[in-house]
Length: 344
Image (cartoon, rainbow, N blue to C red; front, side):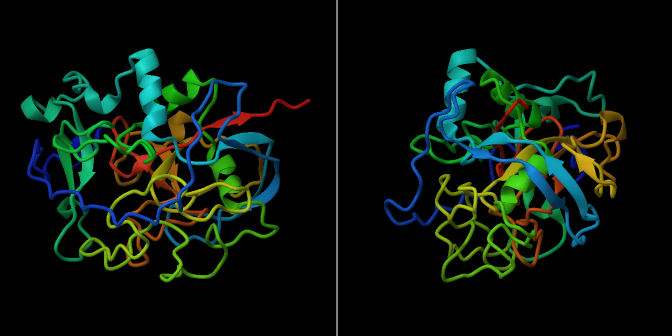
């Protein structure tokens, strides 16, 4: 169920009129990693080999959907060093003619409660708010014409932004890209194992247990009181950064915290099964559940984004998790892919 349905009673479906996206404060020249063009499997250019093992997945819950921690094992896998970029996704679209879900109108048979403009192609866009609060309908809009080429809607563009993570892609869009390369999306367990970076003991954040350092930011997150003011002290004000602009973790992976949320393969339901598991892949589709939107089955997103702050969200932690939108994108959700190593 597209978020337009969930918020139809509270949001005006917009073709324009959103706040102009904040211009990022550009990082120092040469600071960011130069992305490597993805190649079909078995090639692993731009990927990192993560040797599998056992780890403690999850943590003492800081939100109701998290934890409890459990012993978990994953196998060996390759994973993208960075989030998939606009350039990567553009090559996929050029080669296949793929059309993303946000570029397609809704099927009125599947959405009998919508009509007219509400069925037109659209994406979900953060537009900000002048004052703090706890009402997401105040800072999100469903915007006609918003999709991966125009992440904030008509008038926005990815021209000259090849190295930014592609956004406004649904789970199905991300999976289609992964399959094109002969890859997959990471399971939640694989993603979390990779995010911890090989540490002997899991830590609260990708970089350790210490809080964000405003003088030397470890990730692109919201600095200030959300959603009213992002200081942009990390170099990017209320916007994604090009991939690889912040320090890598122990596996050499960039942006496993902040920047954009990343799709996992698993269906979403609150909490983790407390039993130990080998290579878990999440609940079956029939048990998927988002209590806030029980009529729609959703997939897990991980890592937080540039919209996460200590005062709101606070999900730029490996153990944090959320349900993503069902059949459209948002301008702060992207993904990376994996290639599993077959046991010898």
